Image 1 (cartoon, rainbow, N blue to C red):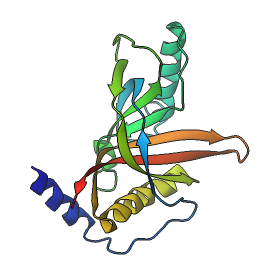
Image 2 (image 1 turned 60 degrees about the horizontal axis):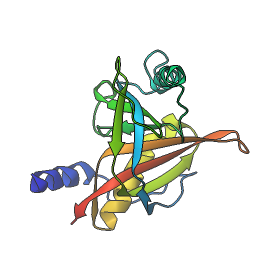
Image 3 (image 1 turned 90 degrees about the horizontal axis):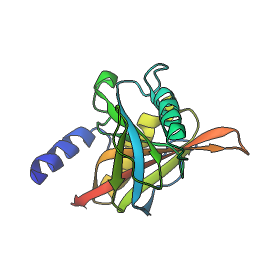
Image 4 (image 1 turned 60 degrees about the vertical axis):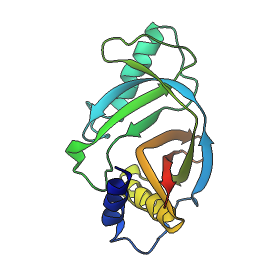
Length: 180
C-alpha cells in the first residue's frame, strides 16, 4: 500500500520539478497541530457555492451551536479529503468544522469528532482564495518533496480574519506520511 501511494505521489508531482513560491505566501514551517474536538457538516463540490459551500455550512453550524448554547473556541476550518489539484471540483469532499470544548451528540447531519495531535507542514497565505489555493497546495507538496517528505491528505484549511488588514488569512496544513 505504501509503495503504491509513493508511486502515485511521484507520478502526480513529476511535472512540477521546480519549486516556485507564490506571492503573498509565507515559507512553509513544521508545527504541531494540537488535539482538538469539533462539530462538522460534510459537503461536496465547490467550497464557494453560495447555497451549499463553506459559508452556508458555517452559518448552519453557528445556528446549531447557538441552540445548544455552545460557542466555537477557535477559527472555523475545513478538512479536504481529495487533492483539488488532481480531481474535478465536483469530486471534492470536505467538512466544515467548528472547534468546541465539549462533546456533542451527532444530530441531523451535525457530527462531533476528536482529532489527535499531529505534526503538520503548514503554509499561510493572504489574498484571493480562488487564485491562491491550487498554487499553495502545489507549493506545499513541492517543498515537502524537495525535503524528502511525503504529505498525506486530508488537507486542513484554517481561516482567520485579519481586522487590521481587512483580509482573510488561510493556513494550509498537511501531515507527514513518511520519509522517502
